[in-house]
Length: 108
Image (cartoon, rainbow, N blue to C red; front, side, top):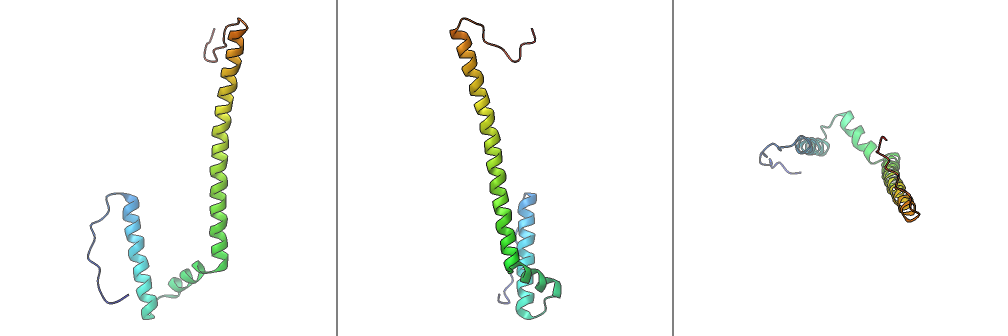
């Protein structure tokens, strides 16, 4: 990073956007401090940990856990659709055999 100052940005209109702007500024400041040799031990430790094998493995594990959770959500949604299809198939069979379809929501 050179000594140039970046032009002041307008604050983002969303909370997430604003958070992203502030994180970006903090990272830029940390980079400047690391280059200048003025970074605190906490800043140095933070970035050293980010580059560690353990951190990369942890991030990979978290990514796989997210994929697993997404798969479980899809499986639950699929099971609901299958249950609905079975219900429709049973109603159709009842209709073909001359019986009235069962209405799950009918309180009679």
